[in-house]
Image (cartoon, rainbow, N blue to C red; front, side, top):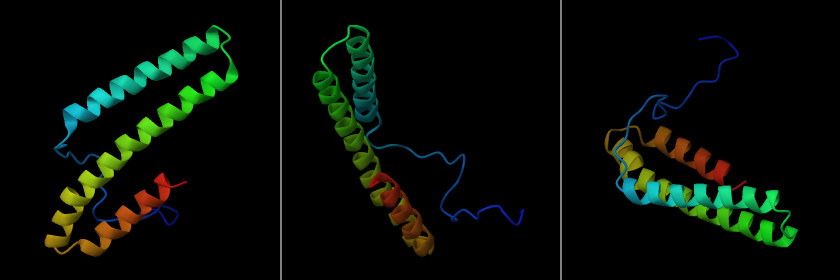
Length: 105
């Protein structure tokens, strides 16, 4: 490892695959959000009132936050619990808290 390279927690894997328990619902939400983003682009193209555009952007952020919270909850109940059972709890909690901090910015 290079001296300047950051060491990743043991639970973080670049190509890790996880079965998402709410996969279909998450994909539906993300498709709906994608449509909202296209709608905002259309509003800007149509020179719509700024407050209306900003209201839609706030709705998109809220929807993305809901997706993130669902994923975070699933991660805690699945990956983190599994890591704790496997004796890797400290690393899993550190990783979990780093994600929570990123999401709360």
